[in-house]
Length: 146
Image (cartoon, rainbow, N blue to C red; front, side, top):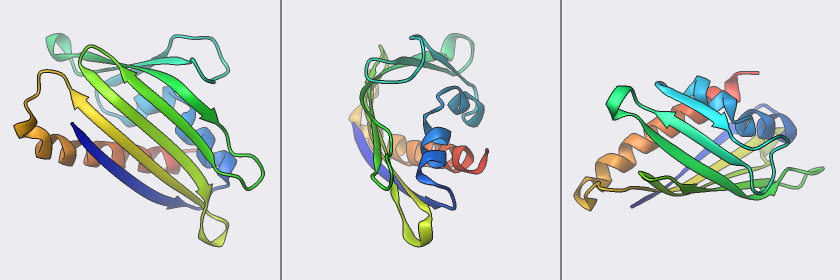
């Protein structure tokens, strides 16, 4: 199991940063070899189920997630979303927080606990470094693309 945190500041309003990070289909465009499907009808809220299928051929796996906290930003109040990972391979949780930052910018905090079933803890340092890189690039792309 690994826990990591990413922080970014973007020249966006809270609402725009929130929208860019929580339009789940956009995650599939930002992560190589990944498709994202929302299994529940819109709008997103507590109980929304999302599946990210990553990999190729026999090396693909599903990352099934359920939104358990959904608090979009309101006025200058922070927004917070928590996803519980409930797949056969990927377990843990992810939290996305969008809050006011310096100079009217949006400050994004992404926290995640990640466990891969069948992966020995000896490989946790590699998993953490890989996850930080992949999720860091993903957050950067999501915030840059309108």
